[in-house]
Image (cartoon, rainbow, N blue to C red):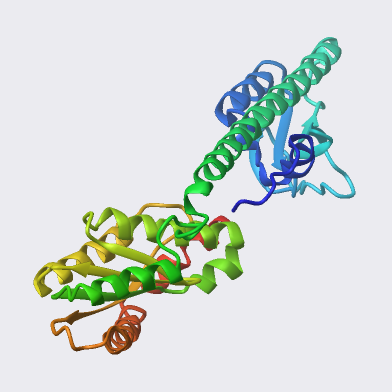
Length: 311
């Protein structure tokens, strides 16, 4: 996140490989026309994707197998990149209709190409504008966080969190819940989906931590995928309920790629003489125990890896 966006022209030249025919035009409507051409004139057609996988067929092709490398069909291109092939057999067409059918097929191909390119540009433009708006919002938001907040998530940075913790110590505020939070398998997301998605996971968890807390909560990012939370003047049962709400919000988060999961350790500081260092150490230990349990939960791995099906 925060990376300079590619020029729109550049992304148009590079992103066509991410689109299949179903992303660019209505396959049902496309098949209706070719079906009518077959029943009305005897034109047999086969449509494949850029790799030769079958999309639709109208008519008899026998043992014919498409070879898009050595014997490509009629190519439908978007920005110079082939998105699908149409193979046509004209043997069954009455001679007097041959030229008419070829003309109709040529016009059909040009229409599909034109529609596909407009659809592609419109889709990429929408994504590009959305990314720019997000970047502008982040840049406008950034100055507020230069000194005391983490620039990615907006929660307190490590030094500011420590200052707030020291203030609670000086004021002898007890009871205080001391909570350590760690994102499970953040590295898996980083390695499989890249920095932007792994950053989005961190932001998502930070938002959940904030949304589940009240105004008195002190939330800080202590490391790359780790957070610490202080809940002053709260009973242990209320602190446990906060942790439960955080984990439930992670599990019910809906996204095609991200499946947020956090390990949480919660320890109560009940005595003013007990050091925060000691309580944080206990909370961290409890967090690692929670992590071991969560990662053995049935369905955990399947949920984590769901985004791989989209690659």
